[in-house]
Image 1: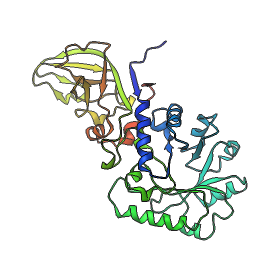
Image 2 (image 1 turned 135 degrees about the vertical axis):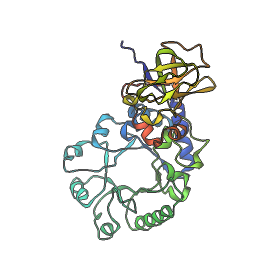
Image 3 (image 1 turned 135 degrees about the horizontal axis):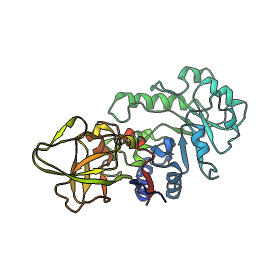
Image 4 (image 1 turned 90 degrees about the vertical axis):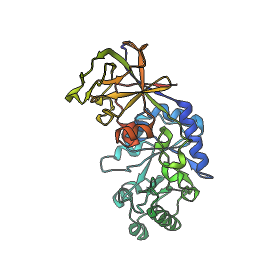
Length: 344
């Protein structure tokens, strides 16, 4: 078997714990799970399995290709396709285990002839996907069997008046549309309070270790841990420059661990000179530029580390976002296929 010098260790207990906290914050509403983008890069099939065991029954993907990748789908679970039914998605109507989230009048027309149930997205202010309020008021949804009527918050991660404006708009339009359930809140929306929960919440980022708002700090556990093997341990003398451009110059002799990790793996250049690794109870800094396949870590205080040993990068999402300038979403979804995923 080929050896992988990179691994992504995924904590199934932490994933379940995060879902339980979000479900509790959702009050009486059901709590679903966004598993689009391969569960934010962590592996959708394994994530669905663990979330199902935790009690989750409602799942969301972006496209029909993502839905097909999860087949055969358990009969007791709901699966919604957020991008709806496009002009080239007609073959997807045969996929009876998945339900489209209709986003436009054109999508409504394509789906209406099937006679099957659907979900519907209403735009209440994000101006991304969704039918307009005027289109709904003009009867665009007449004759549909709507399972879940939903909208999406634009500024839930901020203390913005737009949140309450959207909540009120959704409440008003939902009172005039016949649907079994209503859904507005994502991870950050759940943190805004139970007025935003309606009948079903749709967390994503917080399931996988992201902290979308201060209310979640201390409750959301880290799910993904990035680990890389040391390719070489080397000594750099005083005045020696490290990496492309020589952006780090040793002010005194330094011990470096060069690890099998770089921007081709999703450990992007924003970590250059700002990232860090965990070594026991201490942190060791990334020095110099991150390159395509290699990153240098200063390990003066870890003489025990040798070639072939593993080093864990600090990938706690709020901390890593502060180090790199990347969003917590980007940190997850850019992790590459060269990292061997292993669930524990």
